[in-house]
Image (cartoon, rainbow, N blue to C red; front, side, top):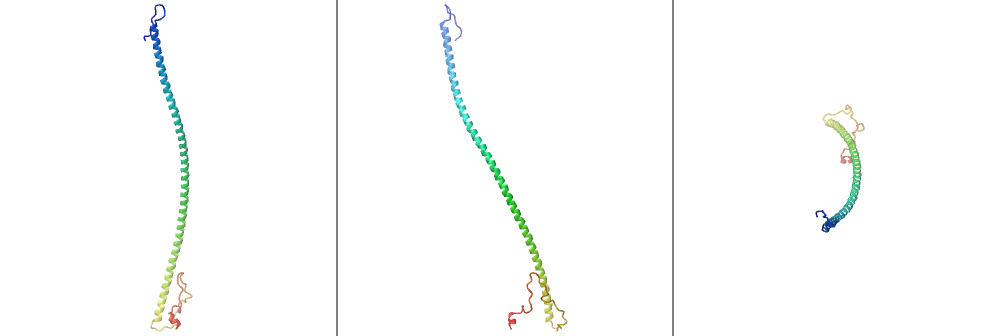
Length: 185
């Protein structure tokens, strides 16, 4: 189609030229209609995709909201557990410190008792050694071959005057340490 209309002899335009232009316009309109239908179909597909995407976005947003709430809940729970753990650890630490203080106190008391016992045993040993020396001297004096004048010998401490050490056994009197056979004879 060249778009030129030739004039007819009696006026107007030549029919063939007009028919050609009309035919060309009909073809262009038909092509435009087909293209509009294709565009409408594409728009319908895009609208469907848009609706699906919006639905998925809504579902995703709902899941995101649930997950955010779950994260907040987990954080709160974690903080509660951490607080409870800290409190329990502090209580255990306090109990351990109290036990340690009690054990130290008991150890100090036990150490003092042990020192007192050792000091008492040392005094008892010293008293026992002194008593043994005195007894040995008396025994040697009594068993010596020289006659002894009992009136000239200085009196020794009596059993009642001796102060026994705290762990010392009760001093024996001469009759208590004699064999049982001699006591009955």
